[in-house]
Image (cartoon, rainbow, N blue to C red; front, top):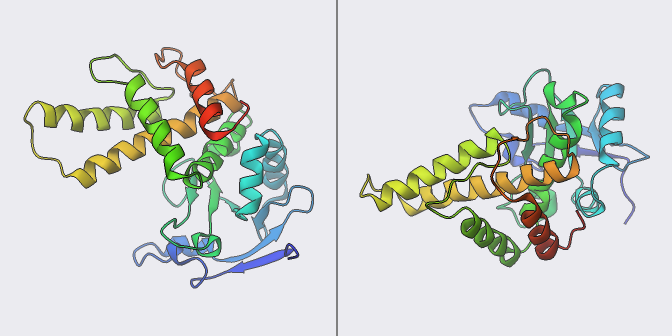
Length: 240
């Protein structure tokens, strides 16, 4: 099947962009044009300089992540200041859907993420979300178990970035609260909190491997990055 030069995505193809209270998300509908050199799809009318810089950064992403991005036809747009979700960059997609077309993955890059020091690590982070979500459950569970063992209770853990550390502390607070007889926390909330930490930890760890000069990396981190590199390579077949 030929790769289309332009794809059009509306409420039928991209239902996740139609929450009733967030009309601004409708900017994720529209036409997306394929960049001939990279194969990436950019929102029509995107700033040429932003496209060029992102394509250049994309070339420094590991081949397995690039292949996954192209296979899933991730689309891109650029935001003034922050994304629709209020972040520097954001990955979107509805992975409850059964087909790639309805998952309809998308990455939005804001002003901070387009800066020279951040464009590669933030792009790596968002593409790592897609890579994580498209691995087998067995692979993800194996890495989750590694994280639980390496960040076990009673051990001082400082994650790779402040962003991930906040999510780890939230998860640890819930676990410790239940252990000490604190308020009951439902299993769904616990699992959600756990998954947010683990997925974000994976993504920012990947960003650090791909862009070692990433300014957000904590110098006082206690997590063993070399162990993570070995385990990630082994589980996911990467060569970081």
